[in-house]
Image 1 (cartoon, helix red, strand yellow):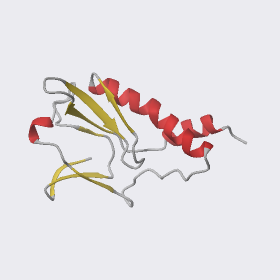
Image 2 (cartoon, one colour):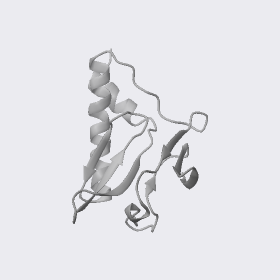
Image 3 (cartoon, helix red, strand yellow):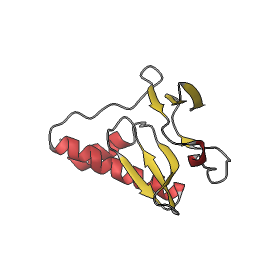
Length: 124
């Protein structure tokens, strides 16, 4: 039988959505947030968008391992047949240019649609 850590690592790499964006942390300071929306509460911060995404990969394993350790169900990753919809709650000033590709935010999954006041903002 596979131990929970190894199983969590495998599950973590099975195609979960990754979203990263800039967020205002204080009146004068911004940071970056990355999250996997299928895993409620699986969100992290970083000083750069790259660091936030790296932190997410590490935390997602811990998150899934915790679920396995406590016999809780692990939500499946989104897929084109099971899409994830997100409502944008940030203002347009919270959009960022990501490193190297001039995108407004990073959405790394084909099953994601971001909505802003019921309008599509970006599709992966």
